[in-house]
Image 1 (spheres, rainbow, N blue to C red):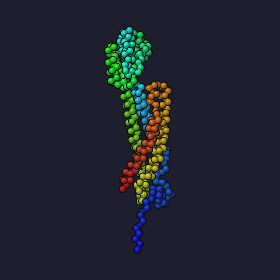
Image 2: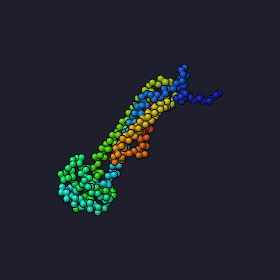
Image 3: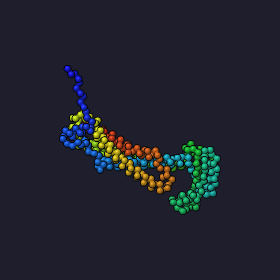
Image 4: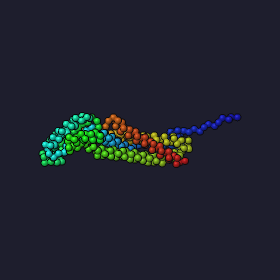
Length: 316
């Protein structure tokens, strides 16, 4: 008596299931999903969204570099103003302030700004009368410290000047740019928010595309289930199509975004401004930007996988 166990049922993979469906219907073999049509809307929607993320990421990194460069340049800079309407007394007190500052520990350089230079700086706001006695201006001294100009250093310099130079005012130059730093930080948060919104839009576009593709192939999927195909095999067919379209859109979007960033960089470089020169993108920044299209593809695959899994679960 033959007691051998019956053979286990054979589960074809997705490709074999597609051929079996075609053979059962007497039709020519055809894939479950049509070949990726890059002329369709989804790859180009992804390309546009990736390009926006690349531009936003580059803008946020540039703003961060600008803020860091400005902080580094001005972290040790101090300005001393000697406020005195009498020009002779102002010059005398300015010279005395230079002497006191030069003798202090932790001071690297001291420079008394010439009155003519101050008048030229103030002329756009005060007119040609700046510096000729009609509009008195304080004596200005630029001080460079060996360390950071923190509150303790400012208090120490102020105490040293008060005894010899009445009316002297000491300010850290970085404090003047604090509103600028705050504005740059706000713009960075705005860029981060834009990236998050575009990521959500990418996931929504892929979700709609995957749902529509599954709905169009629902009858074929049911036949594949009857032939023994597993949910994983069916999902793989959909994910291959999503991967092709998402990868194409990510590459095109990254190229468009990088081109826009390069053009903007050339325009700002033509300004020849010390402020904008500190916002250049380094190797680490470009590597971060290069990760954007990869992240877009991963978001598309994860969204499609979840969408198809939920759709297959709903068929049970």
